[in-house]
Image (tube, helix red, strand yellow):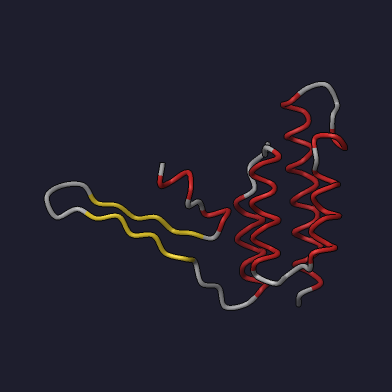
Length: 112
């Protein structure tokens, strides 16, 4: 449950050790600048991504003040099921992933 709630897409690093002296460590990832964060996000977008996971990525962009509210709403509308509904969930999730990568790459080049 912890690893699904605190994911790299949401900007967290989860470490755990089992046993008597075990622990769970949850850390907010720190990035030097927007470019480094965007590089990391592009690398972590899978070949297919659900609307919920795409929302988490966009929320992270907003939380890190890389995009404003208006831009986040435009991106969410672009990546929504209503926009991308092509009849096949797998095709829709693949299209969403490609669009998200294109958006992240565009933001990455703008932030230089």
